[in-house]
Image 1 (cartoon, each protein chain N blue to C red):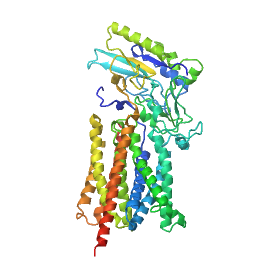
Image 2: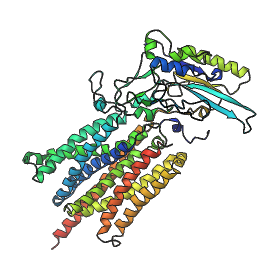
Image 3: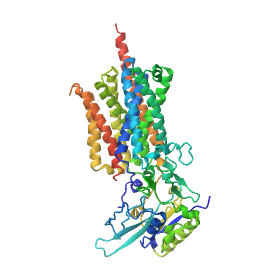
Image 4: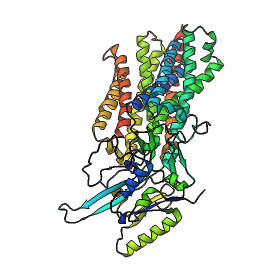
Amino acid sequence: MAEPVGFYTDTTVCIGCKACEVACKEWNQLPSTNGGVNTLSGDSYDNTRALDGIHWRHVKFIEQFTEDRKDGRWLLMSDVCKHCVNAPCLEVCPTGAIVRTEFDSVVIQSDACNGCRDCIAACPFGVIEVNPASGTAQKCTLCYDRLQGGLEPACSKACPTQSIQFGTIKELKGRAQKRVDQLQQMGEKRAYLYGADEKMLGGLNSFYLLVDKPEVYGLPPDPKMPTRNLESGTWFSAFGAILVGLMGVINFRNRGASENAREDRP
Amino acid sequence: MNTFPSSTFFSAPPDWGWLIVWYFYFGGLAGGCYFLAVLIDLFGRREDRPLARLGYYISFPCILISGLLLTLDLGRPERFWHMLIESNTYRLMFKAWSPMSVGSWALFIFGIFSLLAFLSALAEDGQLQQPAAKSLRPPGALGSIIAAIGGLFGFFVAGYTGVLLAVTNRPIWSDTPLLGMLFAVSAASISAALMILLAQRSGRATPGLNALHRLDSWVVALEFVVLIAVMISLGPVFRAWLNAWGLLLFFGVIVLGMLVPLALYWRRQWFGDLNVTTAAAAVLAGGFILRLVIVFSAQGV
């Protein structure tokens, strides 16, 4: 296996140009609109709205302004699949369509997916959606085909500010920590890394430098594996089955016993 | 914006709609009716065999409908077999830790048991001229083994759907481990209700019907307790039901599907003969609304 690779996204230098979105769509031949209808969201400059089957990159525009709008700031963040080390989508996929590649990325094989959508409900980040053209679940592949050809993913290649950086996870973590230290020294005490350590789903192969709480960026503060409920859910279900079974036995047996007793009377 | 009661609020809805609601309902009926029929076969009296046959007659069509609904809900229905066979390697596809994978196999295997019981019931009713088919049901050894294993699979089919919802990252679904238990118990209550209704209409009102009737009241009471436990276990996520879905849950499930039937079961003098029918119909309606609320409310968050 090649050394694990991924993205480090420094949200503090994102300028919201959406070059990453466009590069992703161009390389992966994704349609610009779903069904050819253009609608404006009315929500800042964000008309992409969310990651889905035809948007594998999404630049979020978060406005933090005072009531009178005299003071404020923009938070910009290019969102993408996190390629989790312990990937919830891969874990639940019942067809084996979702696989881990030699680059430690998580890829949905469109020819194997049957569109059950279990992975959509399992992803804690809301990354996956069905592409209406294929009827299958789709998301970022970390440009698997480009990686195989020795190229970096289209989005990071196109990013003009190096907000999206591609590389080996080890190298990216070192680079990201230096940047956090630099920002802290410059007075931006809120800077921290989201998903860089192993506590979050074993580590995110696409991690972020943020300057506010994860929720502000639409990221879960504490994402978990879906199978956390598997064992307890199974035991509770079995307990329910046993209770109902006992109730059935008592009712049918009692009736039989009492009727037998009546029949036995002289 | 910053006050989310759970990290599950950042996931996307899988757009499981009406087909899945109906699947949960028919799957519950298929597994539940089979399970109750097995209980009657194994623990009831000989006069109750027609009632057990009714359970098998309901179970098999319901499991067929369930498979059809699940297939139609896929984005690529022609690839339904990918659930059982890995499409790239043609090896068996099975993940013990994925409820959808295990559930697909359980549906397939339970379908076979359900078919065997269905054929046996037909043979016993004289609709199938295959005397050997009668041995597929208790009291014989082969029939008892089939009933016991099939009953376990039946209850699995009835309850695994709740575990499947819990093994996601959607609000409500994955914020409680009790949905599987709720669905399993609810499957028993709606199955008993449907068997009561059809037994009355089809002239299968055997002596065991009263026992089934009493059992249903017990199970509905248990279901009520489990639903309250679900609500408590949700903790702060419960507020996701403080809306129209919550009202539907309260009036459609708790009042119509639980409290009304319990009152009718325990106050039989109220409507005379209509009591049993009304109670059973209310349980059936409540069971459907329960699945409707749970499937849709978690996706509207």
